Length: 212
Image (cartoon, rainbow, N blue to C red):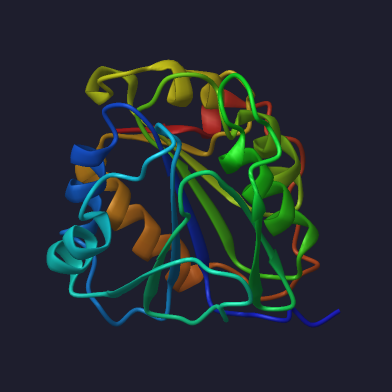
């Protein structure tokens, strides 16, 4: 079946300590690549002040906060708002009140789960510094469906919980420090197959994981 959206979709999940690596990544990305970026801050109930402006300043890429039925477009950064669960459906964003009202949020996992169920390809997930393990539960299904997973190198992460939880799923393809993540995103997006039927086998072989 033909994918409904063939531009690469890159989801970047971050929490405590994730703003600086986010800056390192976006300042190295050119504004016109055809890539769609979805930035999901797993932080408090309030998004970092000025994050849309900062992302545009760092990268030159247009940036918007996600709202209901906002269409997905290439060469754009979308930021998931605080206190909301965001999913993808029919090349649009769906937004609802946060379903988990206590404990750590699982907003990264919810978005990645919807990305797996959609026909969007290629799909790349990046897990940066942060507390808790949000996102990890969705990485195996994403990887088995042909997606690529990148985790921040633990030596460069201020808070290791999120990238370490990702690595422990055995679904991470690349473990990289922030200055190399942008390079890898561009490389993967340029050569990733557009065919929804291209799938890899299980990701249990750590010999395939690249560290830099």
